[in-house]
Length: 430
Image (cartoon, rainbow, N blue to C red; front, side):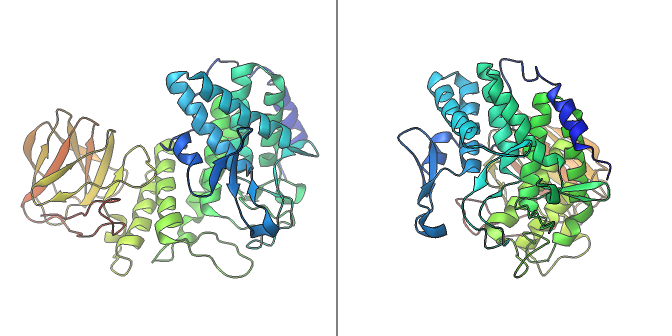
């Protein structure tokens, strides 16, 4: 195997002065939930010492309120992001409380620092003391930011030791499965070598690896990230099971379909995130197909399955949909984004933007081959050349968007993604 762990670690140790900047940006996939909302979510609370805990109650032998290291790291990232926005010293103080907890609760295993789970993972048959392939990178991001804020080298050193597990295969106590030229990061690493390939955990871990690369600039992390992205490209078709997606490719007891309204839609968002950071539209295609699994799993043709409405808007915690209902538009969230729909038989479409922002209209026969045909401010009727798909790119000040086929028909769906108007607006096409 071409991985020379000791050489890579020596290289990392040479990066003694990384993260010297006074400020590091926010985590690349933290979402918009506030720290206050997160700590008040069901099951969460903050102890008297300021540490976030989750109440497991009688589960896992009566674990009760426990500071799950991944949850603590996520909370810390929320606090740090809010400190960046307003330089509230209390947010900084609370962020450093979480960072100190993570620093002092780590366990040394060889040259690595790990955060262990003190209960058996029954789903994946892992003994007490297992570690999280997601949490290690998210924790490292917290420690790196704590180093940047304080200059304390112990944070930096701990972050590097936390990341070392991404350089070692499962059998050596690491969290990666190497398959040819690709890498799967195991959310639940089985050190006997059994690979589970949990999709949401792998992509979540990739967000942490990318974050660490952006902080340190060390090419080894970009290599891990790129090989992890290649793993998704290579294996994503295996997760498609028509009515939803698989939670993982490997299992102990039985295959695990992803719950549709939680992890399956989470897969859609994560694939869109991969499309954004890599520029590879293949992830848009698969996000669209997975979304269609939710909307209409039994009527997917080879064309239609890739073409539900896709609204990508800064990757909010839930997909936001825009109602385009018989001449009525809905105001967009305050963001830049786009939506894609099938052209159907429409050869001319009237577009309207309620605000001063522009709409850019593009067409394509396949994703990634977009050709811009018009820019609309206010109202305009746009002739559409023959193409399979239409993309409307909008700016955050576009206001309400309405579009209506004036010649021919746009293929239609009259459904709400969640069946709940408060969460997603119904979609209909004229």
